[in-house]
Image (cartoon, rainbow, N blue to C red; front, side):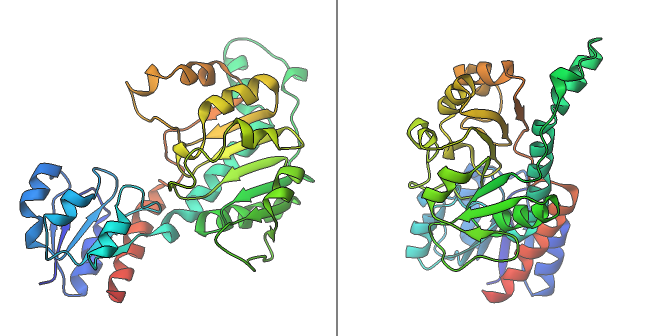
Length: 306
């Protein structure tokens, strides 16, 4: 049986390429979790983005399930450990959105250093303040990247024309220094960083990795960037860091709690909203028009290895 349930909104390229490989694809982007539980036994694969968790209940509903295809980079909405224990292959497509993430984070960084958000708002309000919007040059700064996978390396590659010192820490790799970044220890990260950017998956180990204790060890004030997963960062630590100026600015594409109304109920959200040194975006760093297609193409290509 070579049938795939497409249970989310994927670019048509996935279905087109999968069918070339002999799969029958049922494109059902509006299917609910409850409906999926009822029908998944008819499929050898499921393709999804973030609509619902692929957990033990979903996995156990289909003894015929051979693979789970996640259209995106992170796998935190898939119980990979349990799936693998059942012999189910898990694939994702971090190669598909790495350029989008790299460009988005560059945009956030340049905007923060040059007060673009604040300057724009002031002019719209009738304020012309050149001195108050004096910016900082990126040249000569040390940019520290946590996680040197697809997205981290893409960010480093896009920084290569800015004449910065790029250093990277990845707990699960060695020997990854290249023309874009130098491999360093965490001790060197906290000693040298002017800019800190996270590009790691959410796991039990990385949840709230960035907290007040972690921030305490940094020798210099930092610009903080996160376009990975919101729960990697304790947002209360960000609020405190902004107040005591251990954090000079923050660009956050992801938050511990996302979407409304849940987000508006967080005390720290009110603090972030008030700060002119914070830029927020709605978890779209990897969600460009181009990445929408590329993610599906990468995911379909990986079906060949199943």
